[in-house]
Length: 116
Image 1 (cartoon, rainbow, N blue to C red):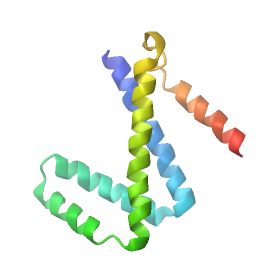
Image 2 (cartoon, rainbow, N blue to C red):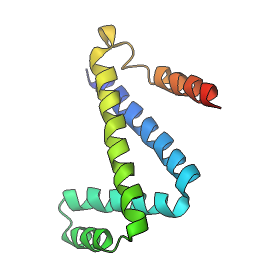
Image 3 (cartoon, rainbow, N blue to C red):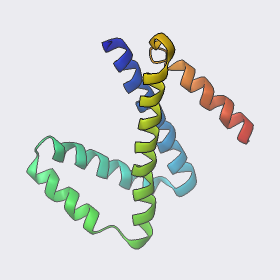
């Protein structure tokens, strides 16, 4: 079971990287850096780091109007992708797909080829 959970986390990580690449290509590196900064501050804040909590609040309060929507969409899409990975993990017959993250990578490669 731990191996399958590890595979699901690997899938989430891979999907997060794909999302990051997409954000960078579509919206630029500045927005990606802002999203990554907020993600890291959130993680530290959740772990109990009070200074990082304050930095997170300040960062969120200082987002410009042009940054608000792309940042919110980035986190929304990441949660959507994490849910997809979890569903993939839970419905895979006998768990074989959840222990083989390459299956998802191949699927996304095929989908990208169809788009372009």
